[in-house]
Figure 1 (cartoon, rainbow, N blue to C red):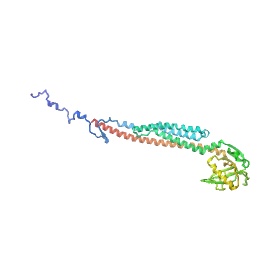
Figure 2: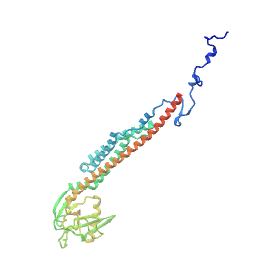
Figure 3: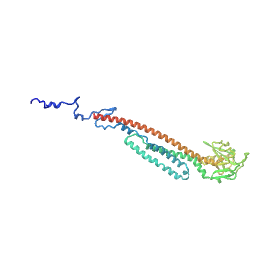
Figure 4: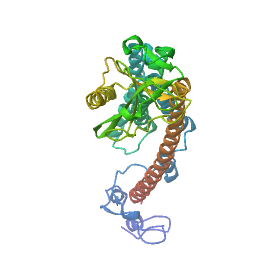
Length: 368
């Protein structure tokens, strides 16, 4: 064949490249998977990696804004539960309707159970997704369980120490002008407050103390004059009592023993102490050769009504102090939870940013 003319292209013309720069690999070679390498931030890159997710999107996913509603619920719901549980256990409903009070106390566990169900769902979702982010549902369940427990325990304390003695005294009768030489203890077994005659006195010479860890002191209430001359009684049935205010024999300094205007008594309502005061009276019977058929134990004072009302005032004061203390406790727990959640979210955002960088590096390796 002859040489190619100027208008004809030979076979060699097909191998000429019209592109400038280094030769590019064939298209088939470009479709082959690239070898594993180390991408940005030390992340492995491979063919077929997932598309890159922008880091700002991951950062937004990792961080949470403070939910004001959740914070308010976590603060006020446990506090309200504490108030309700403490009130039911400590006030007059328990004294008058104990079965109903126990039922209401049990029903107050219902919101705790509901919060527990939601917290279990949150924990199950966290385990399924392998995410370590705590939620307000878990915090609310724990806070409400703690509030119910503290409310019941604190209510029992108020009821036992203050309000039950007040309700017991308020439910008993009040007697006035009681002459210790004419009345017997059996006649006043339902007495809550006793006002004796003006000539009623404490015979501290015949007081006695029974030692059992504490000293249980008892002195007979008899009839006497200003010259400390006491009338002998066939039965000493009215006794002034106190704790750790006397010696084993004599030296009685309990209550308003030295008040010349004190001629009344407030009934002892502590059943756990009555038996020890009875032992002190028995020792006095043996030591002074006297008799006490039906002893009635009272706290000797001038105004038993004011003392009875002080029990009620003390219970109410203790209740409101408990409400304030629990609110401060709950406020502190919520503040700690907010700080902890923010810290966990910051750590989650950092990890998400690192994962976003790895995904971008993998995507770049595949596209090159």
